[in-house]
Length: 175
Image (cartoon, rainbow, N blue to C red; front, top):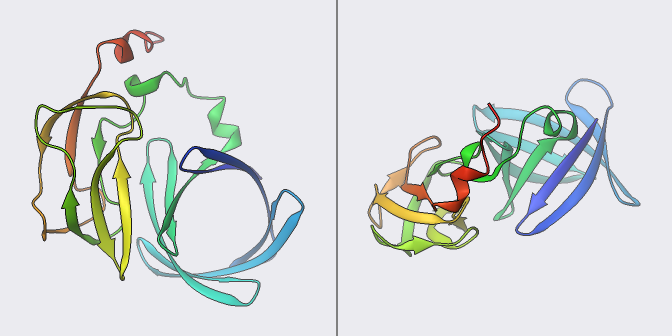
């Protein structure tokens, strides 16, 4: 299967082949790695990548799966699904910001009423001694910050609500 792997502004093609139950081979460009996995909980997995064990946190998003490994968050999107749904900015994307795994809010970078740009940092959460910057999925105005610094948060919990900028909804008229 072919996937797109996004990290920050970079998109990487990822090819995956099953290699038995609980394992697969992944190709990123010319690099091939063998991966085995074991689910620990609903949002946590133990991966063994070419013999090195790492913990991964996984959460569903409207654009694919958010995967956090070694303090870096990636968006994993199935190539087959990308052509099946219309992509028109904020109209079809998330309108809220949620953590990819259980964490603690360590820093809030925005306030209610503040205008934000797509990709702008909104807050920082910490899990397993790793900080993750959560960013705005689109340009807009923060309508509400639902958490405080030091608060424990969970996947699917809405941390920040954002109203799309006026130009965003006009792009999504395909119904």
